[in-house]
Image 1 (tube, rainbow, N blue to C red):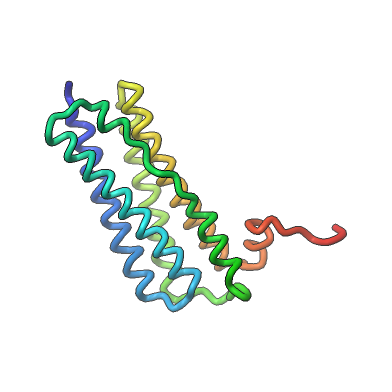
Image 2: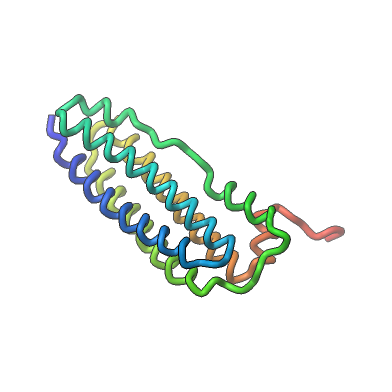
Length: 175
C-alpha cells in the first residue's frame, strides 16, 4: 500500500506548524498584553501537541506499519476559544489598546492557518480510504479552530466591548 502521499502531507504539515510555533512563541515573548500573550501561548501549546502527533505518525510510516494505525489517530479536541474566553473574563476589564506586537502575528497566523487548511483540503481530495479521510478531516477541524481563535482575537482588539457582548453571550437589559 502506497503511503508516500501521507508521508509528504505529514512533512508539509509539520513544516507549516513549526513556522506557526516560532511565530506564536516569539509573539508571546514580545507582547506585554495579557490577552495577546495568552492567545499566543495557547496556540503555541496546541501546535506543539499537534507536531508530537505528526512525529508519531511519521514514526508509524517509517516502520512501514499499517496505515490504519496512523489514521486511527484523532487529535484531542480542546476548545481554545473557551480557554481564551475564560482568561478574558478573569481580567478586570478588556483593554482597547492593541499590543503593538499582536497585529502582525495575528495576520501572519491567519495566513499560515489558511495555508495549512488549503494543504489539508488538497490532500483530502486525493484521499481514497475512509480512515485516511477521517484522519485529514480531524486536522482540518483543528486548523479551523485555530483560524477562528485568531479571527476572534483580531475582533477583540478592534472592538473589545462588542467582542465581550458577542462571545460572553451578554445582552442588553430590557432590550
